[in-house]
Image 1: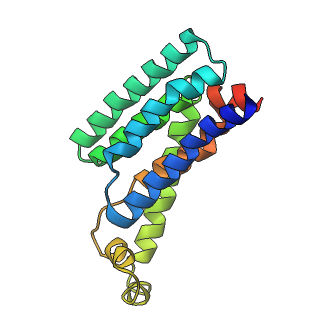
Image 2: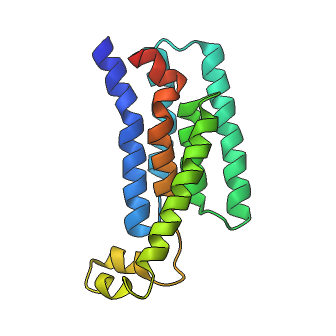
Length: 170
């Protein structure tokens, strides 16, 4: 049973990393990533011995994050895929681990912003010109911010605090 629990638990970091890489290289996060995270949550929670009240609280946390993500998307702060990834990750975090998740995501977003500003600066930009297309796109002045990278970083850092992770990993 422990192997099944850990295998289901590993779905979360694997998909978070895939989402970050897709956003980094294409500025898109495919819907299948968020949908797979949502679909894998209940089996992982049940295999991990999480009770129905806690699963309900996790679902409510994910729904709240979806509303937050929709608001941030409507304000033009993040993309639609970012909002969906935020909600799917918040589902796995549950309450109260969603608070450190959001804090770590914000800090990672700030670090990502500084890194991209450096990449887009006049003295680094010439070095980027010979790189792959996705690096050149990241280095374009005035370009977007692949916030899925910050969401995934925040999720991976906060995941050990999540109810599901603590239940399986002890």
